[in-house]
Image (cartoon, rainbow, N blue to C red):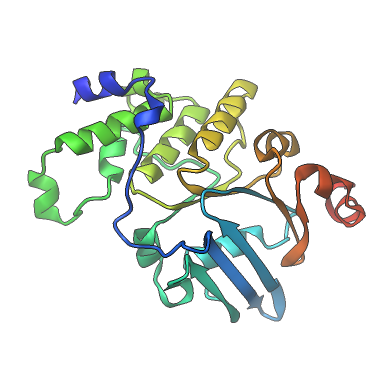
Length: 273
């Protein structure tokens, strides 16, 4: 195991996973939401929301508090059922018919704002526990890592820049390192789409910069939806990619960061506050 980690340290190019479930992405779309509405006691948290995410795309989602960003992710991951509308993963998986566990197994991983790691276990043990394997008691007790599994852990450690911390208890990591570890744990589950909720909240400037580098390294290998309030960070990772602005449960504007920043509607409801 140590040999695999040392071999993969700094070798991000070798990183890669193959998802176990076939997701039809022939049309270049990994996620398609069409007319999604979610009502809570008459209040529409999402109001006929329609958007799509391309295969390998890094999409930033911004908007004021209450715009529907969290509810949208809840619908995608099966936590909340829409009142109406459809949500498709690729072309062939109707997310509204699946449980949270089934959606995760299909290839959608979600990271919440606060990192959740096993603090008493080492970094490497956290990645091993998160690995996409048979989690029933007997296989877990008697399992031994294969060479491919050890390689996958080593490659992920190198990607998230935690190889030097591999044997350190996760509870001793900095806030930013815990965030990277949790992203690594999601990667061990072989996702095709990653949903990241405010990934740089509470980070130092150096950690924020490193997180931006990590997300851009993941782009193309995975599709990413990044919900974030830090506009400087969004600008740093969005490049010429598409940024979506939500307001009152619907898409208010969409385009490059420069375009949405210049949009008078966005200025009035969000940036101008």
